[in-house]
Amino acid sequence: MSSTDLALLAAMLGAGFFVEAVAGFGGTVLALSLGATRFPIATVLAVFLPLNLALSAYLAIRHRAAVAGRALATTIVPPMLVGLAVGTGLAVVIDADAAKLGFAALVIAVAIRELVRLARPRPTAPPPPRPALQVLVLGAAGIIHGLFATGGPLVVAIANRMFAAKATLRATLAVLWFTLNLVVLARLIAAGDLTTTTLGYSAAMVPVLGVALAAGEWIHHRVSERGFRWLVAGLLAAVGAVLFVRSLP
Image (tube, helix red, strand yellow):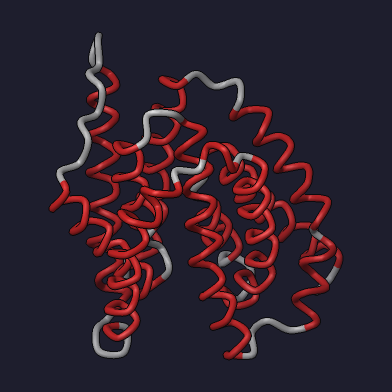
């Protein structure tokens, strides 16, 4: 990879790191979507993932007091793990790319619903999800993550209603992404996509990660709770739009 290509990839991945540092999600989809316009997706993921694991670990440890550990262990992770196993199995028998289009449309619909609620003169607090719906959506998120590693938006659609504080949402998601991405990392190693070369590229981008993380932390702590809700809903819509466009024939 030339120095020009490396700088371009660093800018693309840096955008993902910044978004994830601010909101706690969306960084992977953004980074992969941008990176895939110029580089092989396997290479982008192999360079991005080790740094993203470091980002998630930092947010989880630095803000560990805000992590909703009980909800994560008893409510979020179990249905997602079941769905992840199902999705991994389905990946060999169905057309994941065709399913991705419907998923993107669902994410956009969820985001629009939240944006409409926020636009009301006195928006009501989002009601907590019903237990049955919660399990169903989180299970679906696991299936989607097993199919094409983009189940995050559905998780956020539920977590955004479970946790009123922006710090809790971000820190809890950081633990979740770290856990799930360890599985993805193992897949990359098994497939031979993670190499000494890609690790070298990752090491070269550590300063980019540091700058993006510092900027993201600064923004996160200066956005109001209501502003953060707008940010989450808008980011969901943007992520859904990116997925939708990428899924078109």
